[in-house]
Image 1 (cartoon, rainbow, N blue to C red):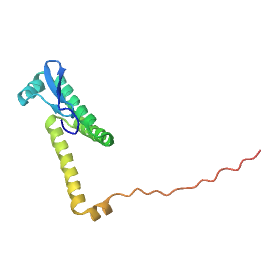
Image 2 (image 1 turned 30 degrees about the vertical axis):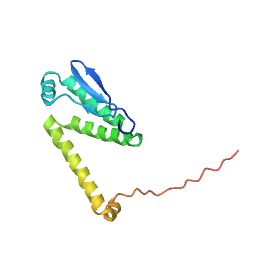
Image 3 (image 1 turned 180 degrees about the horizontal axis):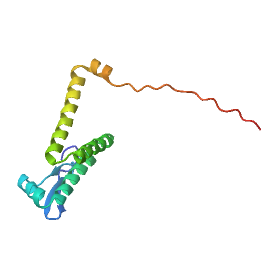
Image 4 (image 1 turned 135 degrees about the horizontal axis):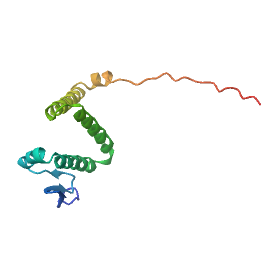
Length: 135
């Protein structure tokens, strides 16, 4: 046991492919050759495995992180839809990750500059007078 959680594995059955899911929220995927076979012969099933893995990871995250992870996954999904092919999607997602890592590196190495560079959201608050009510 780790952190009081059982490491017992349960199998999920997705048509003819076994996918193992642990209680810790990790998904054990089929081997590479099986994934390649699915990509060419049954892309719908591969997509089902992909979505299941993502859902399992997000649901296994602490509650305070789930909304952010869902938002990030939405961004990834939208970029995938915009791309013309899987290689272009892979390159775009890789670029997104590199940008995020570069921003993290900047924040860790130069925290004062990073905080100053962040966009501040300011707005002028307008006051409106209520029309006088006449009876």
